[in-house]
Length: 306
Image (cartoon, rainbow, N blue to C red; front, side):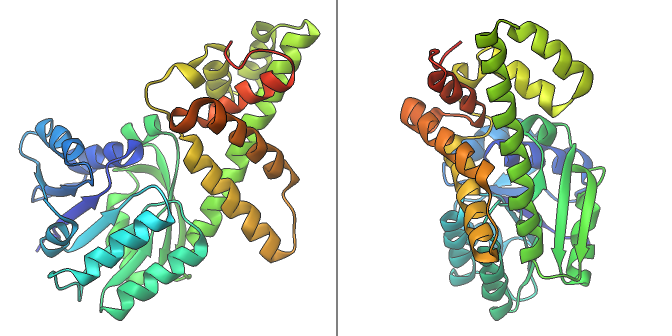
């Protein structure tokens, strides 16, 4: 009998992943969706032609599902979500929770304990990629947890929500989010490097257009995409950030904490986080990770906006 799926959390990434589950996941039953802001769930459901069903509460979504995907913004949000899931009237014994959130590895380990204590299974599945990649089913999924549980999740990864899997099957769930946090330092470092290069190109007289020819030729893909976001002002013009500054700072702080606990240092992260703090002050919750460029511009005697 085909599993009944539920999805909790419809942020930028969650919406795209839901869309691909519906279109390519070979679901035999409507996908149950829940979001704290009900309108997001209703709006998504209205576009799916009856292939989704909106749940009014987390407990309802969990009660009706066999496999429950969660994708929320931070550690507190996922801890609260799982607490409601296991404390509600729904019986969770035998159910499988799959968390796609980016959180501290210690949080992931605690989530696994909470689920296991109630007789439920837990798999960590953080993903790498921007919202556009989520929309196009091009994410990279990191899977960790008991091998049998991971096998239940695998059919919804490559060819559905993602293009590839990094497989930590049989390893502790916390290994997946440890990789996710360390991996996100690469993204933050990339944005920081681009921001400094753009500011230098403008101040030195090279010109941003000339620098972008180099970036497009040598580093196509994410580097060039972020470079264009900077040069066009997309980092401050968007109504909704692609990678919110609050979430980027959360990831940076997790990385710095992990480094300190491990006896290493992340000097680049310290610089990037100071620039993210400046973005927060300038733009508030609308700030985007690419706004690091605006912060570097200010340090260089240029206005935040291009």
